Amino acid sequence: MPDTPPAPVFEVLTEVAIISQLANAALESCLPQGLIAAHFAVLSHLVRTGDGQTPADIARALQVPKTSFSNTLAGLQKHGLAEARPNPRDGRSKTIWITGQGRKLREDTVAALAPALQELAGRTGPGTFHALLPSLRSLRAEMDAMRNP
Image (tube, rainbow, N blue to C red; front, side, top):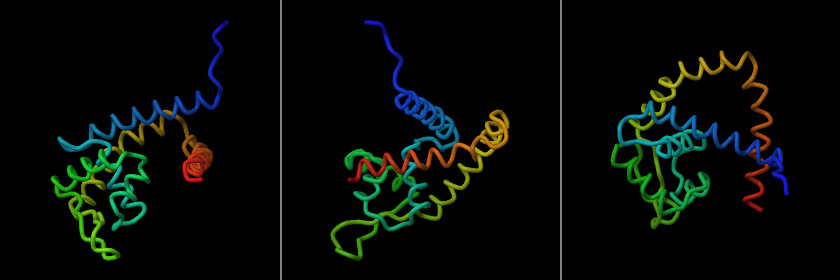
């Protein structure tokens, strides 16, 4: 039986995965020693959606197991980038808050990435990212809906 090329859906998802790996490598080159893309993802998630979420909620949103998220959270706390506070709703669980140092690190990292992002935008041509964004947002929304029936 001859090899058949993968369906376009698989090819698109493969390209997105490779782009994600390349983006994470670029991101991690801008992070201080001891921090990885997963740490930055938590900071960005909380900046985008708001402080005070439980670890379980953040782990679910980032699609990571709660056990590995515990390690990520411990790393953020160790570096003074986030803190856990008692959950005012139940008093038993914790909520996660970004510290001033964590917000500054996120801003500094985005600023450090800016030259590479500007170069990428210049290489791909004007409007490339504006053109891609609606389709990628739609794809993400559909995939997100599929995981939360």
